[in-house]
Image 1 (cartoon, one colour):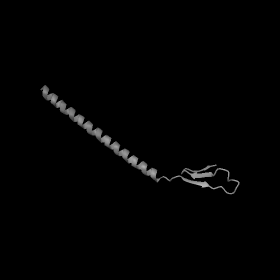
Image 2: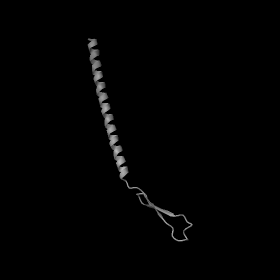
Image 3: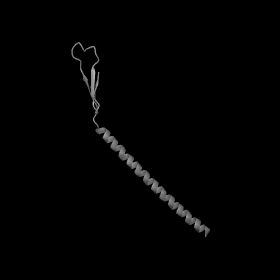
Image 4: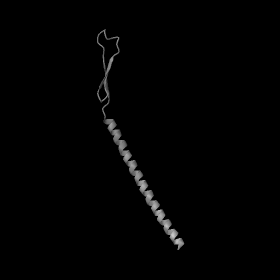
Length: 83
């Protein structure tokens, strides 16, 4: 009777362990799939954002020839003027 009970309890413990393993593995796969979708989405969003456009104002005449050029560019959030 003791041997049958121990075999039965061992089988129940193995079944519980197998269920826990399958549950944990499925959670891991769902997490990996979710992170993959988020990574692909972030990559696509980053590629679709506009690039910063840089422009320089050229100096006119002899008066402003010794000064540094004024740099103007748009970083996507607003125009920046560097004097």
